Amino acid sequence: MTYEPFRSEIREFQLPEIADDAGLLRIEAAGVCGSDIGAHAEVAPERILGHENVGVIEVLGSKAAVRWGVEVRDRVVVEEYLPCGHCDICQTTDFRFCKESDPTAGGVRYGSTGITVNPGYWGGFAEFMYLHPRTVLHKAPRDVSPELLTMALPLGNGYEWAVVEGGSRPGQTVIVFGPGQQGLACVYAAKKAGAESVILLGVGKDSHRLKVGRLLGADIVLDIESVDPLPIIKEMTGGKLADLVIDTARGDAATLSSAILMLKQRGSLLLATAKNNVSGIPLGDAQWKTLSLRGVRGHSYAAVEWAIGQIGKDRDVLANIVTQSFGLNDVDLAIRATANETEHQSIHVSILPWQ
Image 1 (cartoon, rainbow, N blue to C red):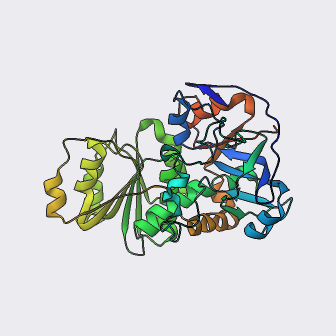
Image 2: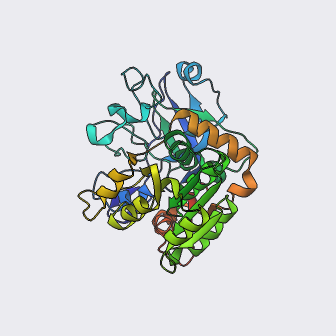
Image 3: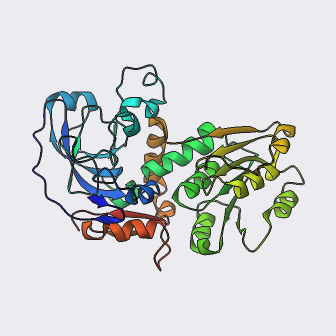
């Protein structure tokens, strides 16, 4: 568990009593998300990180079995959200925005809630995780490795952003800033949706990630530290420019200004990451082009179902994103690897608690 900035340690807790409407998950693998990098740097709360969780149901209440449609020993992918299920937001596909699942509003969420909130088992960087009555889970295949299945949530993000929100479709040109796990997921989803040209942009240190982008369907990969991408985009589109740009990288003046220049009339810019109070953005150009600007975050239930299906069908290709695994003793190292702060160029790494 994380107990101070950039420091984790192993602690033992007594397993909780499981009520009829709850369960207990034996964690097989927990993916390390880019958001875990920032969470690892925070002072509070003391918590068990890990919200890209795959495991086998160890204990299951009778009411939970009926509600979730699962049995003991079933393998499942667990979403991080714990929506209330009855508010106006939860009655849509946007249940991820429910305040009951927002820790900043007093809600609970896997990987974010502190150990002082009973029963404390709120994250996947552990041997077991409590399954709250409001858990959203998905049955997962047994013939796929748990490390690969931890990609279900980030791959679901890619589908949600590139296809559901971005509207990627045949004939389009899609540009993705940032070859991290989310950006690569967007590349893969956009290409699967039929985009004619997918362009992935990164920097020099992203060389391995850019190569993986090619394997996932990117038609062109560019290191923007060594080449100006705009003339290349103009040439390959015959001057029409891009239909969609997704910024998974920085969301600052540099990427946003470049994105506006790369977009065609009535193009769309999606922000998967963004800074507050950014100056120097050519909003006049955005207005003249009548661009659409939209923030995106998280995934719908359908997007995760799509991701699990693709992982089962396309495992050899998607396995290129899965680069390393670590035991519980090396959670700090795993997070540093995800932040690209180690010698090995990692993309998506997993914690294997029984390793």
